Length: 353
Image (cartoon, rainbow, N blue to C red; front, side, top):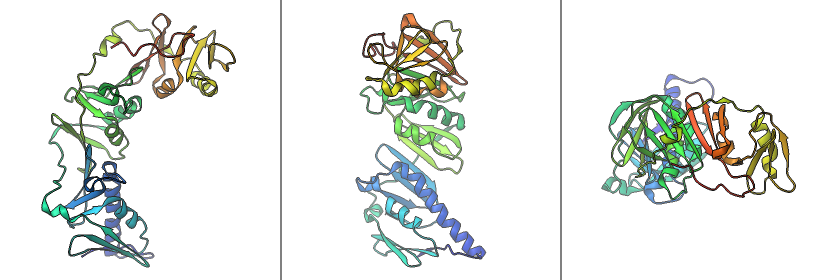
């Protein structure tokens, strides 16, 4: 039997320790939930608790975290987390002898959480992390956060559906926008991480401390030895560096560019916006909305939603109207966005890798 306690009023040392244990288990369940699903196979909806570690996996991603509980069980993740969050008084947690359930009780509330007892038969091995091979810092998290919104996880092209991790930088493209973020960490080349895993690592509130990988997976270690592990895409990433083989003289992005974009984009029939004579416009023909923005180049057009994706990075810019392309720069970031020909209704070509 395992008891977790949380009572109101003055607390003894034992009660405080037990309350902390409950909070820690809730935090651990929330952490590994990134690798669990609401509906799916048992391995995708039930977490494994064994040897002081809790694991979750969904087939493509897994997560693990240390816990204080010595319990060995394969419990339904969402239901266990929901039950613990409903407890406001003294908590007890008791595992049934047949391994098919865990009983949670707190005051007038009680819940029986289903367990999958095939765990003990070895049908679901623990999703162990890759060996740690390099140190990492939150600079890598920052790079993933800057890049993962760019990619399209439903793209049939792996390089446009994942985030590239390499020594020194993180790269992402959707075929129209490309962003490279310099994290400065010496890492293995060619790690193409699915968007869901990149988002999970980027948005984890814990400090990143280490990195591990194999031919098919990568593992990210955090300060409390918790980890997120993901399968990788197989892909020969296009040579994007040739896009930057030119001289640059960027200038500050036009003031009010994004304020103007917010004003006119809702009036665009096809999501495209255009620049002309110090104006940003919702179209090039017929009834259009306009907003005055000084310093815009003439006769250029862009996908408005893609332009919004790079707002945080669009601080220094060099427009090249002859090539229908714009380069943008910010601290630690360089990137490019492909434009559209004025008077046409779509972007003609992907970024010319």
